[in-house]
Image 1 (tube, rainbow, N blue to C red):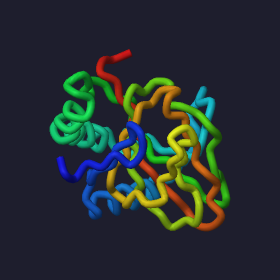
Image 2: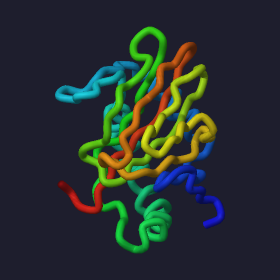
Image 3: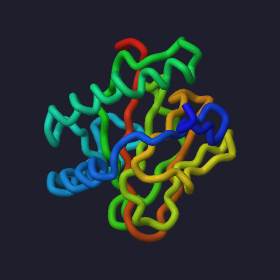
Image 4: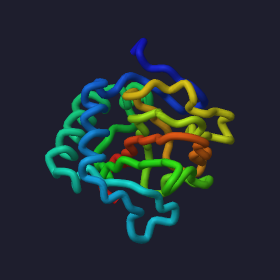
Length: 177
């Protein structure tokens, strides 16, 4: 468990995806295009659901979560939490032309959120947790940030001032809602 770091209160970081897999996700998301806000999303941003690229990509990610992340979550949450349900994972795309930032919010459907930085070719644009006095400027690409999705961990994407930033977001619950 020496690879898991608590970077702020109840916000954990550890290595997650290979650099090659992250490059693949960025490449196929760019090929697919069609970035858009989902209907009914209060904090809509240019995003792409993995299942729209291919359903097998979402299935593969689910297997990685169940087999490799759940053992870590069981330790972090003292045996009281493991992923039982996953909302459709999505890649969010911040850039100068479409969306530069996202306002303060929490992930209403999520008990535990996983956020994976995929592309960091931007200046600015970190994920900020004001209550925890933490910003993700030092989180390595392809690692995962794990945090409670509820109102104890409200967060925002600070504005990028140049370039592009992509991240994979995964909302989880112990049971299907």
